[in-house]
Length: 128
Length: 128
Image 1: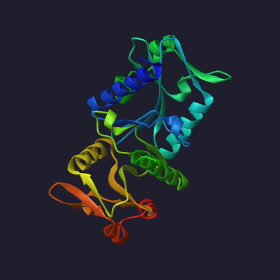
Image 2: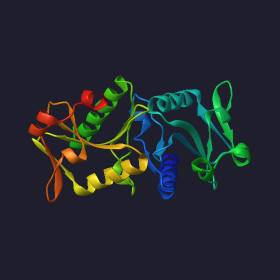
Image 3: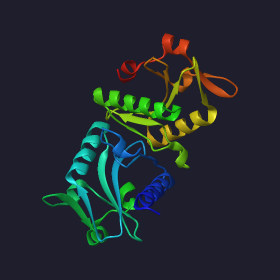
Image 4: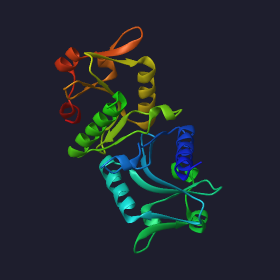
């Protein structure tokens, strides 16, 4: 299975978990096909709406480009959603970080597996 | 261009118009690929959120199946969005109908071009 297919499967699994907890959620159409910003996943429970940029990795750190983060924040502002970064490390569950909690380097935002395990939010934390 | 491609282009045009009016909007990933309900387009201005089922036709009437409408309403309830049906007739702009305003037959909901022109809402009406 390609990295792209694994990513889509992992996003579908996340959608599934949101529905299980009573939230509505959906995946966006391929973001590359639009000139407008779009998160990978959007979820809401009628009170909170989450715009989520999702990454899957087998490495122990995951980068989000400044452009990706900027577009996520822009979408979230217009839509009225909370912007979240989500990383699924190999054999781990999804971990969620606010923009402020994802360390910013000169070129990127980065989330390490160590940070995820020590202070990342799980889906259970996120929807609590 | 296939009917599907024309539909996607028409949805992209709708997304574009929402952004032009200051709303955030995105297309859903192919709805056939998910076991969970998903509208074709979702849009929000931070106050109102619209879940929209979109159809493109060259005929003078457009049907929405009861299943499609039921799933749209279910998604909208969970997500906290208003459910809307949208039809783009050939060489016309998008027209929007609430579920109650789309005539229900024994098998479907139907919107005719005549109804659209006489009492359909345009995007301008919808976001007013």
